[in-house]
Image (tube, rainbow, N blue to C red; front, side, top):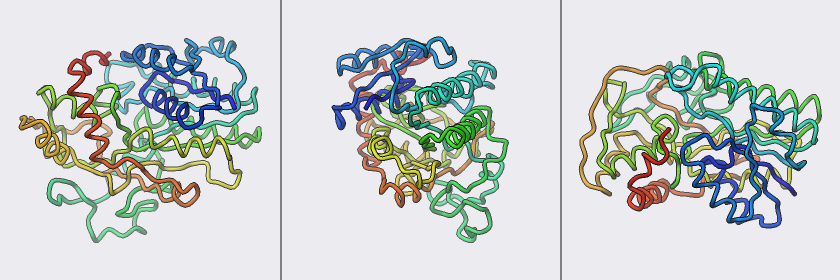
Length: 357
C-alpha cells in the first residue's frame, strides 16, 4: 500500500503521516509540499528521519505531479486553511482559489489516472454563515449556547448537539469555504464518473502541539502560546465578550478513521462525514482564557466589540454519522490537547515568530 499525502509538511499533513507511520509501518508513505509556509522545514526533517519520501512540488502545477510514483490512495491535506484568505490582504482571491480548488482539480486528475482512493480534508466552514448566524443563542455562564426553545426541526441539520451534514451549505460561506465546498462537489463527481472511492472529512477546529501559530488557522494553539509568552490577546466581536464557542479535536485523532477508510473502503458508506471534538469538547474563548490563567498565571485580554466577516457565535459539528458508520470518536481529551500545546509553548518560546509568515 502506497499513500500520497499532499501538504505533508503542514501541521495536519505531518501529524497524519507520523500517525500512519507508527500504526501501519508496512505502508509506504510519500509526501508532496511546496514548503512555502513558515515552519514547514521543521516538519520536513522529522518526516525524512521516519523514512518518508518527500517531493518538493505544488499541487497547482500539474508538471510537479508528473514525477510522483503511482499510489493506492491520496490524502489531500494541502490547502490555504484561513477563513480570511482572499480578503485579508495577505492572500489574493485568485491565490486562494488556485490553492484550494485548482490544486484539487489537478489531484483529481491524478486520482483518475492512478484509479486510486481519495480522502479530502475539508472544513466546517462549508456550512452557511447566514444560517449559522440565524441560530438563536444566549449567554450561559462564559459561553454562548443555543436557546432551549430552539427545536431541531426549525433549522434543518441543526440540534443542540451540533451541526449535521444536512445543514445548509448555501453561500455565503467565505471565499475559503466556497473553494472547499466546490472541491467537495468535484470530488464526488469524479467518484461517480470514474468509480473511485472518495471520502470527505469536514473537520472542526484541529489542534495539537507543533501547530503553526496563526490566529485564523489554529486558534487554540495561538491563544495558548500567546498567553504563555504574555503577548497581546483580544476578544473580537460579539461585544468583546469572548463567549463565541468552537469545538477542539486533536489532529492525530483523525488517523484511525483515515486508516480504516484506506484499508477497508466501503462503497455503502456516506462520502461526507463531520469529524470534530463535538459538544463535549467545545469551549469559548473566555473558558480557554480561564484554563490558561490557571496554567500560566493571569494575563489581560483586550476587547474589541466590532464584528468581523465570517464570524459566528456558535459552531459545533455533530459527528454522529462517523460514529455510526466507522465507530469513530475523539480519543484525546480536551485538557490533554491543551496541556500538550502548553508544554510545547513552554519549551519553544519563539514558536509564534518561527511559524509566522
